[in-house]
Length: 329
Image (cartoon, rainbow, N blue to C red):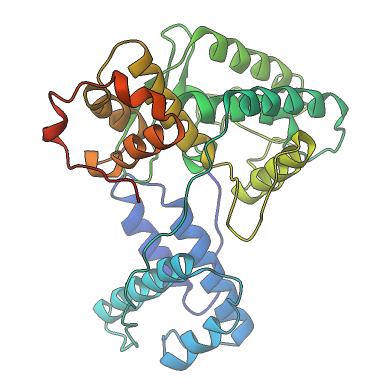
């Protein structure tokens, strides 16, 4: 049972068609749906009566996005452009936004220490015992955060998991809906499997029918519905404060997504400590993270050496020439 998005504006028929095109590639396109929902809501509040995209419409929308950073705006501009091109293909003359130069990312991932990870898990466990709100996301947080850290899943991938995707006997999860539209199989360790079983036991006591059906969404709130990524982020920010981990806000983190970055760095470090060359382990990590190429995974070599410079002396230079040299900025 996936999240349902309802579109009601004059642009709705074309928005739904764009969503169908995205889903036909095998991707759930969750972020795209949220952006299209934002566009749909704006078009309704703007009073748009005819299904047409004009420069004036986009300019008016831009004035409402004063808190979006450059990279977020670029992504949203891209969706506007895709929607306009689709409508043009359908015979409706629309303004096609010319995308600005893609901003270079200046974001530096936050890598949690092992001690901070342990504290996050312990604090999360304690919060669940005292939370009594009916629609709270608290009951899933201990299992969800451990899953994100142990597997490197994106939050959208984790929240899209269905019961049929969790294979306890074989110790793996099946990721069907990923950012790149590529399915993958991820192993889970015994300790994580036990945490997931504990979550399922807790979930089974909820007075909501159908929670255990194969196609039902795996992570649910107390009312049986799926949480929004923003709800998880808000919960996580609260956990950070309780743990004494400074949260800078305004997209500067630390973020839930940094658990994925931390998993990558900790995994590479563990490989090196166990005697595996870091470049040999890179393809394994790339497959786990669901990257289409090694280029997206290479950043973690630099991050690993940056946060754990003592590991560099353990690495063999024999096959380093296979990958582009990464210079510390």
